Figure 1 (cartoon, rainbow over the protein chains, first blue to last red):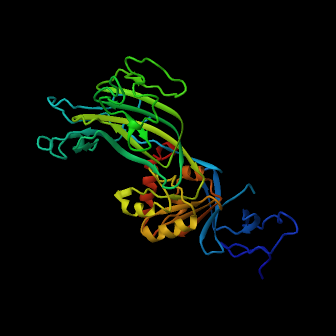
Figure 2: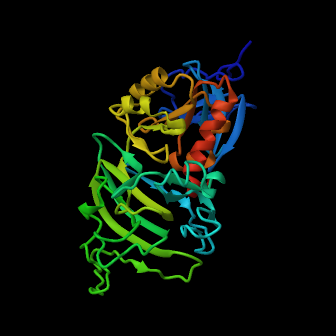
Figure 3: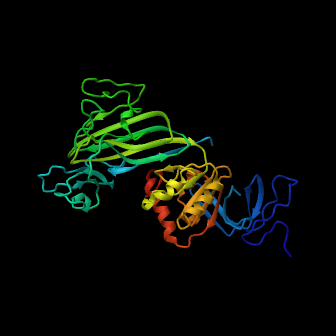
Length: 74
Length: 322
């Protein structure tokens, strides 16, 4: 049985709507929270990479594209 | 960000990290090493020799060893390169600096009637327009003046060099223009050479960018078609358009087999085509600071992606390219 806020590896967890608190609970093991489109979302990254001054995590976005997103300090 | 800044540092034989001003060629036709260029560090020097009977195309030593670009016709003013061409968008030229070596003094008694090879950027392809110069007899023998407002100063032959002459130019200001060329006074001289390194910086309205060296492999035909979708820049990066979606659609149509990227400056997302994140250089990430990178299409042939990276690095050495 899958738990809430836990996506299959490499997938974005659909945002359930306006959160009651601005920041979600600490991520589960293997998950990373990123800031996308003005909201915090949890992703289970397929990979992680340092590029220049930034660190990005890899996941498959809702549009189906392989996506890397900048990671804030966890 | 309201404005973005751009820089281009071409090298014609010498380069900014040159530790000596000893780049030169031999234009004494009696010399045994006529047509040879020495101490070429980066890029190619320019050699003008119109006599293709005595010196067939490809026969000069510097042509043979790939250290010069030879021209077989004379020119009053030669436009070496288009630095940028933004069609309907304006840029603000902010700064240039050049250090040129030449086979004769770059200044005669008069800049306009100078004998050879003063390399400057121009907005019209015609240095005679003198937007960068306070006057055409500035810094000459009979007018030992310095104009602190124009902030332009030429130092005539400041070094003791092996052969030829060196001039250093610097200009700082703001010139609004949609196009900028790199031009040279040659004044129809033949059997001349020159080498130079330059730095040109400009600003432009923040926009989505098409990141592709458009002139790679002389692939200019698509570039002409793209002019209304986004501008051209010699560094292949600072090429502003109006709408990221339009740019992606056009690029997919015209460059389906090349690698390219589009940066959406509204969403701060960098889109990659025939590329993966591994081929995006760190200096480009640091310049654009994208929050997201999306792969529209992974490369089917890694050499395509590698060519994109190599060309960008070659055009942006000051940013971190090898």
